Length: 245
Image 1 (spheres, rainbow, N blue to C red):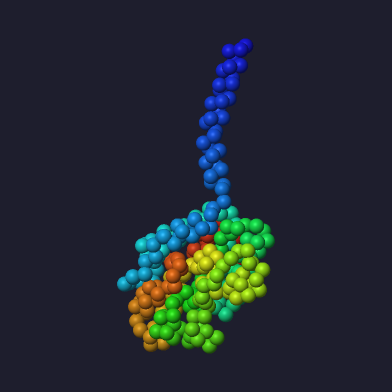
Image 2 (tube, rainbow, N blue to C red):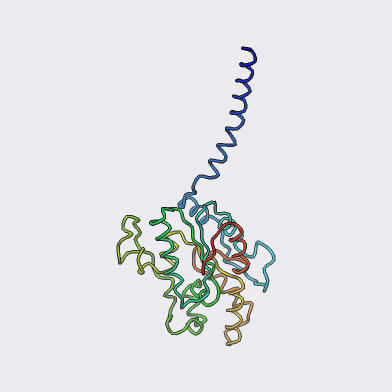
């Protein structure tokens, strides 16, 4: 009887030992991702900005920021949201800021992750000022935007001052630069670039593909180029991102 008990005890210990690595692995997988660590990995992912050609349809991962995009799609966090932003005149920056504030400070998700799926006229905000000057993008954006004011400037960010009515958590932080500081990733759309280039070409600003190449090479820092935003939204939704517009 004692020998039988000893064998049962050894078998139980073996079962526990075998299960321990799996449990540890599961715990690691379920651990919250650090927003700072993810930001470092994403910043280190290459962004090619020396294109010489720009086909209408991208069919090779080397034609967009595939490594960076894969990191975004594979973000391991649970609370993550993709915003479908297509109107530069809309409240898109304000909505994203409000969502960040409520998720992080109200619902206590400090590593809440938000992505801007940018296309349409909102995409004009993802080009640097050199492109705005060269191609007179104000003509497409409207008189409200004589320059790329949507980009804005970085601000000093201190999470303990989130009640400051003039701080980065307030409407004063409704800019791409401040939202990027807070971890929001802005995705660029190749299809939008191609269509904007077509409009500029029709307006006599140059050859269609050459303009598309120029615009692609002058996306603002931190932006992740995708082969097409509408298709990328499907990938993000499949990875657990909540769709918002």
